[in-house]
Image 1 (cartoon, one colour):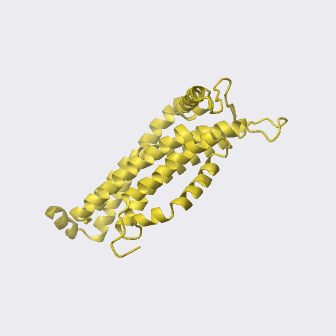
Image 2: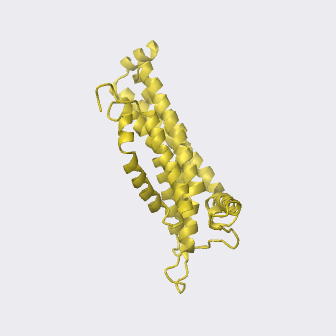
Image 3: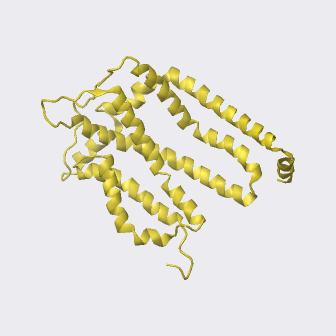
Length: 270
């Protein structure tokens, strides 16, 4: 630690800039190499991962079918005959989606490496206790983001797709879903869920600086339940209470986890 401090003190402003440039170059190399690899593998990724919710044998649909068959009071859920066919209506869409999806997936998958490289640049300027706190925050943030992405992929997006693909304002208007529309919804819902799952980390950080305390969550729990139900209804616009609760429960558990991670208010405060 003393050697790091002495080295840091000896570095000039331009030395820091050069060190940052070196870190950014390494990040760019990692993301680019991973994006190239994903570009090569993208046809298989599309067939077996991104487009998997378009088929009736998707894991969530089979789970719902078994659950509704086992519980008599739930409305039946069938996987038979469900299939979403996508169309492309713009000449260059498939090429640009191939490239952009490779880049964004590379950025997401390399996120822990990106954070580690940034950590190597920042850590020499931190005290030991600050390093421990930042390490915990980065670790929790990484895990929660990927858990949120998984929930978005395995639960939120398939439920939304299933509802919207079968919804008709009139039977005279068939659904023809474009590749662009599918990918916009896919990326938006999955990344939104990834960000939503960062809420416990944000609450923990705000609690550590004294902005937030546990009493806030108790005082506004009823308001939060209503707002979270509205949010779940917006994410999955379906009248089925079962699918609504499938989305609502993970988000509500995040609220309770946030309350658990935040410290109680100091004695003498509300």
